[in-house]
Length: 279
Image 1 (cartoon, rainbow, N blue to C red):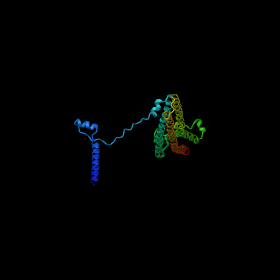
Image 2 (cartoon, one colour):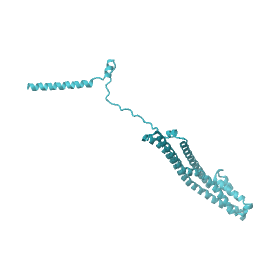
Image 3 (spheres, rainbow, N blue to C red):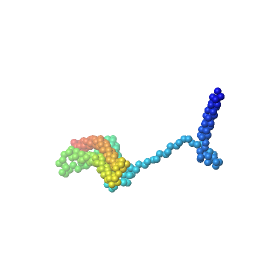
Image 4 (cartoon, one colour):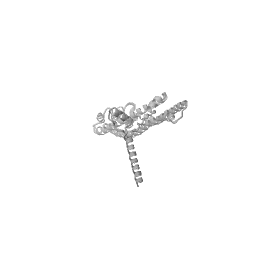
C-alpha cells in the first residue's frame, strides 16, 4: 500500500510539473516583447490572428489602347473608317427622325388650317414657308396659272396632275436623303471590320513567327486584338440596318399623308379653275 501511495504521489507531481512548464512556455514573451519590456515600453499582447497576403492586381496589357498603339497605318485607317461610318449613321438617324417629326406636325397643321381657308392661296399662306404641303400647294397654283402657250395643248387635268406629282416626288426624294448611306454602312461595315481582322491576324502571326515564341500568351493577345475589328464592324452595321428599316417605315407613313394632301388639292384646283367658266 505504501508503494502504491508513493507511485500515485510521484505521478501527480509529474503531471503538475508538466502543466506548469507548458503554461510557462505559453506565457513566455516574444523576443520583441522582451526587448520592449527591457526598454520600459508597454508590452502589447501577441496577436494570434494571421492577416492574408495582399492580392496582386494584374493589369491587362491588351485592349483597344494597345490595338491602336501597336497597329500599323492600314489598321488605323480601318478603325477611322469605322468610326466615320458610325458617326455618320447616328447623325443621319437623328436628323431624319427630327425631319419626319416636323413633317408630321406640319401635316396636322395643314389638315387643321389649309382646308378651312377661303381659297388655295389663302390656305397656302397659313402654312409654314418650309412646309412641304405649302410647296405642293404653290406648285399646283403655278400649274393653273402657267397653262398657256404650248402647255394649252395638254389637258388641264393632266397638267395639274403632273405638276403636283412632281412636287410630291421632290418631297419624297428629300425624305429619302441619307438612307442610301445607312444602307451602304449596314452592308459594308462588317466586311470592313473583317478586313481589319485579317490584316491584324496576319501581322500578329508574322510577329510571333519572327520572335519564335508560339505560347498561348503570345498568340491570344494579338489575335484577340485583331478580332476586335470584327466586333467593331458589327457594332457599326447593326444600328445602321435597324435605323434604315425604321426610317423607311416612317417615311412610308409620312408619304401617305403627302399623297392624300396632293390628291385632295388636285380635286380642289380643278374645281376652282372650272368654276368661272361655268359662271
